[in-house]
Structures are given as C-alpha cells and as structure tokens.
Image (cartoon, rainbow, N blue to C red; front, side, top):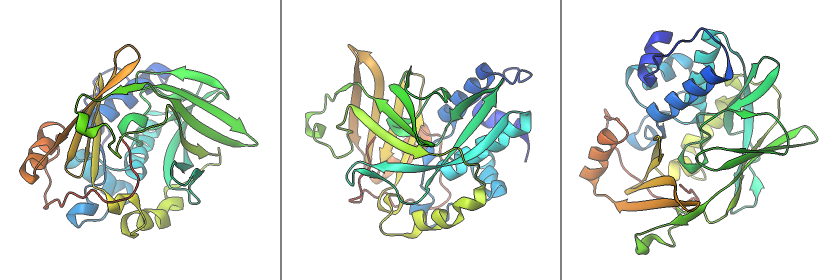
Amino acid sequence: MNIEAYFERIGYKHCRNKLDLETLTDILQHQIRAIPFENLNIHCGEAMELGLEATFDQIVRRKRGGWCLQVNHLLYWALTTIGFETTILGGYVYNTLANKYSNAMIHLLLKVTIDGRNYIADAGFGRSYQMWQPLELISGKEQPQVPCIFCLTEERGIWYLDQIRREQYIPNEEFLNSELLEKNKYRKIYSFTLEPRTIEDFESVNIYLQESPASVFTSKSFCSLQTPEGVHCLVGFTLTYRRFNYKDNTDLVEFNTLNEEEVKENLKNIFNISLEKNLVPKHGDKFFTI
C-alpha cells in the first residue's frame, strides 16, 4: 500500500507538512468527493471485505467505493500514515422507524486529536447525512456546514450526533411522498463512546450486515457521492441529486428513474465506477433515506 497512490485516488495534491485542522478538512473533503459510499459488491455477488489490504485494493487500485467499515478504515490508515493522532471509534446508528439506536455497533468513525483538541472525522455515512468538515468534540455546540447544521451532545459518557436539516423542494411531483425522502427537520444520526476500537471489533457485524435479510444493505443497492454543491444518490433504479441550500434555506431534490443500462451508464459517468461483475439493482422494503 502506498500513501501517494491514495492521494492520487482522491485527487489531493496539497502540502501535507502541517498536521492541522486545515489539512484534515482538506483530506476529508477530497475523499468524500472522490470515493463513493456504496455497497454494490453485495448486489454483484461479492463480499464486502474488511481487511485493509483488500480495502486498499478495492478503493484505490480498482477505483471503487465502500461502506463505513471500509472507507473510514482507509481514512484511518491514511491519517495515521502521515502522522495524525487518530483513533477508531464505534457508533450505533439511529433507526427512525424503530425510534432507537441500533443494538449492535455497526458504524466505524474516527477521532482525530490536533493540538489537544478532539475532532470527529467521518467519511462513511454518505447521502445528505455526510459531514463535510470534521466536527469539534464539544457538547451542545451547533456546527453549521453546507449540508446542514450538525450538533454533538454528551450524556453520561455517550455522545450523540444530530443534524438540523433544511426544507426540501422536489420539482418531480410524483416523488413528493417518496420513502427515500427524509421527513424530519431534526434528525438523529448515531451515538458513540470514546472507547478506542480496532477493525477486528467489527468482524461479526461486517458479516451480518451483508448476509442478514434484516439488513438494509442486503435490501437495497446504493451508491452516493458528494459534490461541491450537493450529493448524488443511486438507490436501486432511482437516481437523485440534492443541491444544498439552492434558495431560501431550501434544498433542491431531483429524482430520475433509470433502466438497467442507464444505471450502468450513470455509475460510470457520475460515480466513476465500472463494475467487473453484473449488478442486480435492488430497492427492497427496508427504511433508507437520501
């Protein structure tokens, strides 16, 4: 594995001598705009592998994306390689329908310490929930970013990440009630503690998420990629583009329904993904919003 190959993959050409917040932010933004958040292996009959070498091969050499266990593990490796003090943490994702956080630790995120201050860096949540900048680990402070306002709060050693979202304008009237649309202005995302984790702590959940019929990842094929103005999302045959704050504190959300050939074309043209095996797009009944 080569750090220069990683930087070439994300298009990062800036000076990396300073281990400061500006460098961390720059690397995070380059990664989320180059590496999609996706689970397409599952729907191509392949495994989502957890090992760092396999992740590097998939994302860097074969120019694919991955889910949080992969893209954030890769980011952890890159940041530690260049000298950042970085810690793997484990998160519990909020289920809106069940009105509770997951019982299992199913999300991998990172804590980065710079000059005595702690930040959360997460390149692996995708869609309109993806942070564009590291979040300072301060309880109760609203932290505005382009996608939304994020807020971290701490209660008895447990941290919670929430967001305050804008209104949405959907010009395609037939999609006004789409199950893919987040309906809540205030959205809980996940909880976590500051207990250090290792990638081995996620081995069992990595298998469960890609094999269990109860998993949203087996229910739906998805791919999302951030842009300088918004985010593209492909779920099954449905392609959306969300432009953040296009006017009057409102996001513009455009929908398109694709056929099988158009799915392949858009994966290449928008997400820069060329699959080696045949994708079977899937839009199952598990709750998943863009």
